[in-house]
Amino acid sequence: MVKLNPLKVSPILWLTHLVPYIPYDRPTVLAFERRRGETFKVLPQLFGEFFVLGVDRELHESYARAVLEYLRGDIPKFYALKDFLLRDVPEGSSEKTVQARIVRFSPDKVKVFSEESMNVYTVRILEGGRAECSCPDFQKRRVGTGTWCKHIKFVHQALREEFSPNGNFPYHLPLWKLNKVLEGRELIEFLGGLYEVLNTSQIQIGGYSHDRRSYDTPMLGVEFEIPLNGGLEFEFLLHLISALKEKGIVASYERDWSVLGGEIKLQPFPATLEECLEKGKILKSLKELVPRLFVSEEYISAGLHVHINMSPFSHIPSSKIQARLSPIVRLFEERFNLEKLFGRGFNGFALKRKHARGKETRYGWINYKPLPYTIEVRLGCAIKGSPVKILLTSLLLQRVFWARLEGRFIPPSASASREEVLSALTSVLSEEEKSHIGPLLEKALI
Image 1 (tube, rainbow, N blue to C red):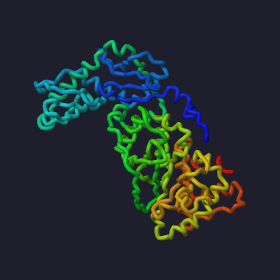
Image 2: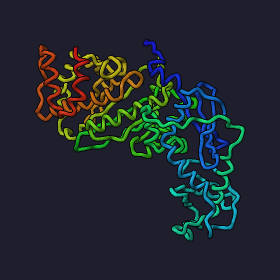
Image 3: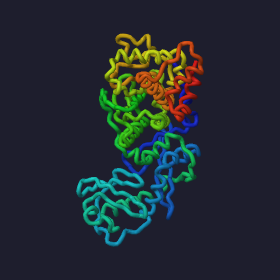
């Protein structure tokens, strides 16, 4: 069994790794776990006309920077919230008060539970100190008037009190400018900020589906297995998957009995260089945000599988497709160090071509069982593989497979030189694709 060193995730990342969550009893507070069971809390505080981020314990500079990296997408929203809290209640606003409580907080969106109507309303904080509410009073009488309903008034008063400086958060984070953050933090920003992610309901795992779709154009599908589950880190992952599903990037989250953490299925996407780089970066970011879930000797077989759309060739018998593509599969097995491209070599879940026979056919590293819909590339490793490399290699396989079936590609002979092999494979790529995939092939070519 391969021994994994957790620091290979990235020494800097691992030593300053934080897992964010919102305590159930106080929705305006952000909590961070930096080691198992060791946490600290962060709360915005309003000092006169300035917002600062208060912390309940003194932090080393590296942790302070990590927190600010997580919050980079939220900091601009605090400026609008500050303008809202510093203004007076507009004339003509509701004179009524309401018995309510805040159930969810983001700098630009507050959910309020009204104990009078027993409903939850959303108060949105806009630029210029403005606000709007989803309650009937605001929607029917106050839209466009600049006046507030009783729920906006409640949020205004409650947050002014909540963010008043107190002795429970005596330390303050230095609000320096962050020019560059880790890709995982960029994903948080893309999803709307840390508060938005943590306020997204955790996705519920579903049973394994055999959804099969037909496409006329080159498409790819991804199955990303999560080795481990449990703890705050896994709960954070469930928020992230849910937020990615709302963005239309994730299709489903399903059980997979070969791992503990289940399987993320991405929405099928066009087989283009741009899409592969984007999706690869997203999967890399997920690993970066929850690295402990990807450190496992027992589940080293966790895979990153890629499906190549084959619907346009459904008129060709599966046996003939396999025969036509077999020389290409043999070429990759004999001429490339596939571990450099996929993060692992052949194994019980991704067999070499000659061993994928009978009952083991579905475990071939190139799996033809899903035909006529797709061919599955099973060699990618979720733990040690680079999602970007795996997707780019799968893109190359899509290009070569389709070109072979369309009569536009002849595999080089077994005695072909390195230059001839590279030239043949890259001949099906655009110039931009060559610039990204060519170097990967050259480094892995035996």
